[in-house]
Length: 144
Image (cartoon, rainbow, N blue to C red; front, top):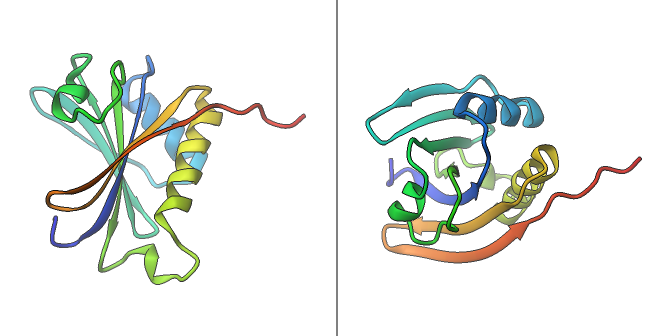
């Protein structure tokens, strides 16, 4: 997979929703297809592909596991969202696309829709090539 991957944007949240509740909220809000689910001994995850992006959501069974796996994840976050853009079908082929726009749209959209903070903590550009972020998307009230 890594040889096909252009980049991965990593987001995290702290919510009491189940994995399926979170994925359903994300699917409905962004018009994504149904998520496919799987699990293993430490985590469960769901993923959906749409428009050249894989939306991958991981929810470990134990709190603080995300931070143990990746020290750029803010303490307390229990759901990780990875936005994966592939080289062979990347929306980057469209000159109007940028990962910054994708992160802004997804992170701010989730913050507003779920009324929670969304943390953009890391961008992966390849093996050993990471950019650490400390960007927090705060929920904004919708206009009346």
